[in-house]
Length: 296
Length: 294
Image (cartoon, rainbow over all chains, first blue to last red; front, side, top):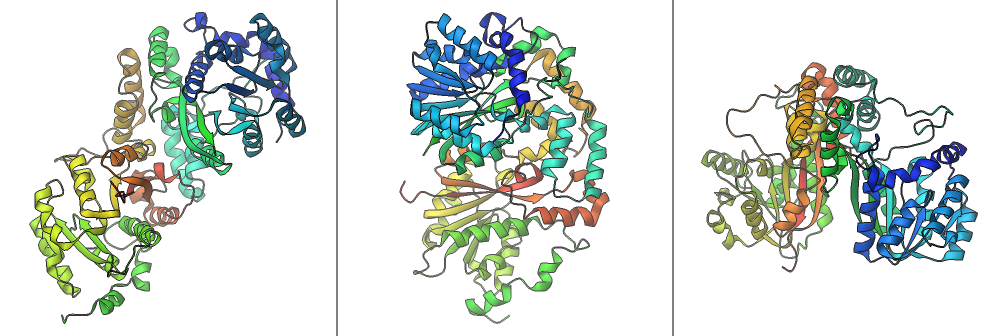
């Protein structure tokens, strides 16, 4: 399991504004859709329904989610992050909210020795969560195993991922890649070529644009994988989890490429209205989801 | 034709090498051998089920038996096959097939899966270990009634195999079905200018005129991600989905690519991913069990 140094640089750079994603005041004002605001609400709802009394968070950032969980549920929330800048700001954030700054420590989740030491120091938790971490991890299996190490038997895993099935709906380059490289990967190249030509005529294969940053460490310039929900579920099951379910967020009420041409308030209203949906639809309307599972 | 013992019949019914090769013959009549791949999975599941045969051969009832094409397949697998159909012409045809195979024609009766009274004639025959319904659920009016009736025909612990048309396949067909699935199933409650924009966008990217709407009723399509609830509600348990009828490219290329399309689709019927079939297959079989105790 390895996490690129680029990931650390990316999150050091975004640390100062990271809290804005969770600010209820900015839900309607932020240019970027506040997906993480809805994500943490759903996480809290799940933790409440499971009756979790302790939570450990992988990749806790500058502790905004930890603070929210602690304030809403009044439970112990500890966590780690690999970015020194996130941890520095996180400790300040915790202190400002009268929470023990020792609950957040700098740990690289790819360093298994450091994780094991942390686990020995803290013991097992009722729930272990990782929001926005597995996209940046090379070895998925080692990562879920590491999460499991912190979890009590019968405890709850909440594993966020970028949803590759959303590409079924985006009608862009990612749709073409999903169809040709995932669904039809075993089909010979002459048939693939026929399908590719058909798709080129229908899809906006020049989109989406890459999210870059002037320092070369933008989100799409670092390792930021999509996961296939079916395959990730199988992986989680294979590591001793049962009762798997999905919770989806970051809904899209139309094609992402249309967002700019529709009244932005109406678009966001439609987007936010869908966030209450808990059905199967999220697998195709959402760019991200969470696997919820119980440790056997 | 002289009457044969069951054992003789079973030998005769087994698929021959030539028949098997026929599946791969692009010139063969009757289109893609989709049911072959459905039955292959059903047979495999029946073997896994390990029905207690101490009290004679296991019994299978086919709903909508049609021309009776499946009779020989399940007879040769050791099943006593029974069946019914709501079309008297089909009842007569499949009765003929039973006779040709040296089996009692009385095992096929007229019946309507949505009318439990019409099925009561099977009550004196004892319960069934398996109920098979290919191409039935897309055409029934009252789905829950049909499923309840199928469950009641089963012995406790017995298994139903029900074919459904796969709604998710529409995500790769880029035609009218895609439009309807996205606008109705996915964006059904999105309204106003956002809906209008999605509508206009889709119409410019999809072949919304194909396939043409059928003159009569349109068959129902089912979502494999939610079908388990339909069967749970009807009192079944241990529900599994088995996709079949793969497509190696969009359906519109089936004719132009002809042999290659067929051969590559057949090859895909063995792919082991467990999820690709949810999108590449136009149909799936739902396997579900009547609980041992209700």
